Length: 501
Image 1 (cartoon, rainbow, N blue to C red):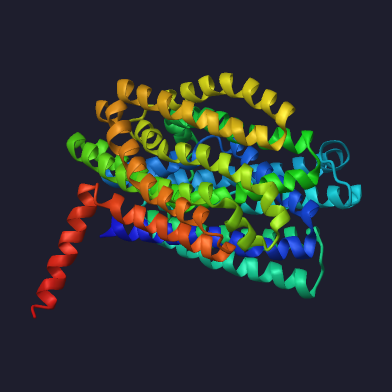
Image 2: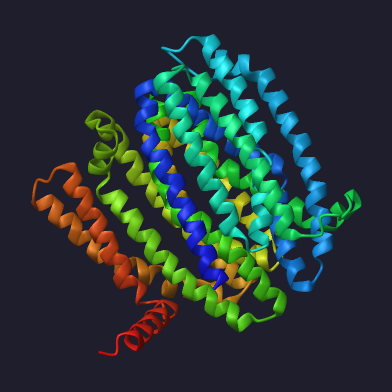
């Protein structure tokens, strides 16, 4: 019951966060302009890049708390959480200081603004540093709640705070100060509020509130954490390199278009983030018990359900992107610029999404060296690929590199996981639990494309067709999962007992 509740809560949180971003974007474009939105995009990239300073501690504490609950070592987990809280506070201060100091250089030499004054850009970057510091400990306390299987509490906090933040930000921009600086000030305040609430919830979930600080205990988790830090660093370089390069190589307006496409594709996180937050502690628990048979079954069933959902959503975006963007922004000119970017980015993002399963399995088995080695290998290929394509084709080149590298990661990661971690996660898993669901959802997606191409439909109508095709794909594809079939049969039996006539 708790597993299903956690999945539902985490999924609801992701849906709400994506909807907030999608609904708020037209207001930001109206009140701030495309260059200012480019600054918001740069902030998002900077936030992702600075995650290397996490040193792998957030996923480490999640794994430690999940393992501690299974082995009855909660007090040690509570002590680790309190100790890491102090470390995160120190890192937050360091982040704010560093970003504030280099902000003038970024405004003058890195970001290529045309309409915004250099001083405004520099001040906005300074406020980015303050915002990052206020939000920095969020990942630690969310990781603690994930490890304690308390995703519902983390999700409720995230949804409440982010909805209030979006409403307040739009209100300030509409009736108060229309400035990118006002945007970051409001966001920083709500970020700090979220940290405070999550901290209380995390300590309550772990218990043992009188557990002492123990910096010596960090040595116990340092080995796993160090590898996680390496994974985080290489992953961030791999996922953010295109954005970092494009922020330097193209003008701020074009970069705003690229980040707008990234935002739309981030809708896949509605499925990816909550699924990982559920499967990772579950994989860890089953591995700690030594129940490999149940782990293999759970791995296969959840992979099939996830693949059906993520591919259905990805195909809806890729095949109907121009209509969706036009309906979303009410700007056909923006849709023309963004459509090819979204179509390419969504391919790479969908393939990376399904690789969360091998990645979570590698971590649950305590094999962080494997994803680190995979990331290093991908970077060797990614760096020249992204640089060459970005230099020759600009934004389109960056999106194309993401699609190509996603395919490489899918096959290389699957082969390595099957050979080095668990045989049930190898090529057979890829064919049976990933490619078959893709083939299933592809049929209604192509039918939807044929309908919209054969008839000239307004954007809202084409979007509805895309959504209907995705829903049909999910409904048909879900029947491929034994777990989904069992749940449907249970529901039907209960319904028949309640309605005998």
